[in-house]
Length: 308
Image (tube, rainbow, N blue to C red):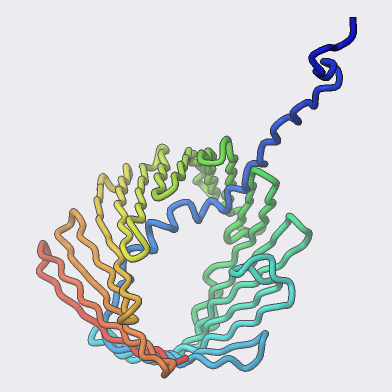
């Protein structure tokens, strides 16, 4: 008999294409695991600071900083930065050369290079007048869903001393990242290693991160309540110093007033806050901060002006 109902044969029915799963994202760098939480807390301020930024071209900019404080002598810093043509993201441009020199001749400099599409290199140098203090070399490989980093700090073949740090992060799901850190140090008569495990869970409005190892633990929680309010909670424990610290910070943005307010409270009886105010149409930002340690009865405040 024919197909009296007019139905298509089973073999002719369209088949649903299998659902393609989105690839897992790259977890980023190990040093940025707690970045969202740390950005909530205010930066320490003391004395009076004037910062003048000047963009010389699309690749080169300089900044002059004058800092006066009651705790030390006045200081001057010259900051220069060069950014190349290869821009991978709004915050990543290669090659990049950054240098900062103070009035005593001490220099902090770093160079970032993109050796291949996934391979990055960084060199960091720090001097105190004419003496080298730190030299560090980093190599980072970013896969589709993992990041591996190797760092060499102050390598000295003659003195047989070196500090080596290895990082690895792996995205298990779109929200969960696991990894670890291995720190190895060697010098004459001393050698040791410290292993730290790390995990990060990212939800829609909050991020929880935990580092735990033989040297201690570091946990943070970041929550974005809305476009104006962000809060962060941080816990740090150091087994060698037998010390623990608990901190709570908040970040309040008032876009209509061009103001940003950051505050903190911690378990050491410290409270602090920093208020930043932009002055459009002028390229000027004013900042006022105050910090009080009730336990040690110490108070310091600061004021800064940033132009450019």
